[in-house]
Length: 230
Image 1 (cartoon, one colour):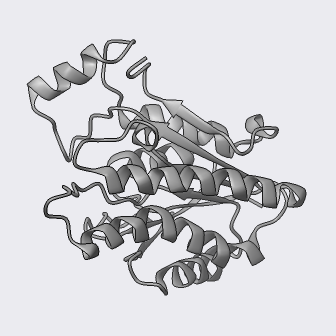
Image 2 (image 1 turned 30 degrees about the vertical axis):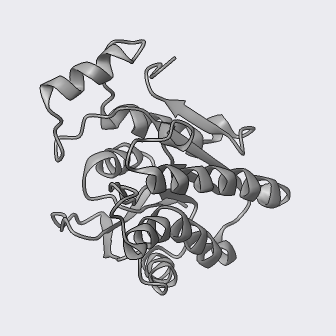
């Protein structure tokens, strides 16, 4: 039976590239929140707000009802927002942590009864987990928590044959959120390969970690940054 992959935040940017890449090998379910995708006959699109504590269980329930199985989870949905120390509110901090860290944990908990040996979880982290971003420390902290959770879940689920890894992108150019030419030039100068990344760079890394080719890899944070800030 064809394997099923669930990608959160799959309607745009990196998530959309992951959907398109994995669709060549998997049956696809993905979530969206603010950008409604075009209907596709071979993909299950689920609207989900991961600040809702019930969202994870509902998403998994919908996937199982539609496909009858779940083999790969890609935790891509995320909030990237500034939290300047002078003005950030508790609610702003909480929202970032809920979506970037707590939602992947809740999704795995909901999915565990359906995951069999050979399943894989891949989360989208960030180089900012170890390189604190100015005025966005909560974002960096949420990704650092995600990294630790990734390693912990890899250890706990290893005996069950379930692998858990993450991809940490560097500077990625997103059509939906273009940067100024000056900012792109700054990122290029700090990147060994001399170019910003594109969503497909991350999607290919996710595809590898989800595949049997990575069958002996778990608990790893794969940095895909073109050598950012080496």
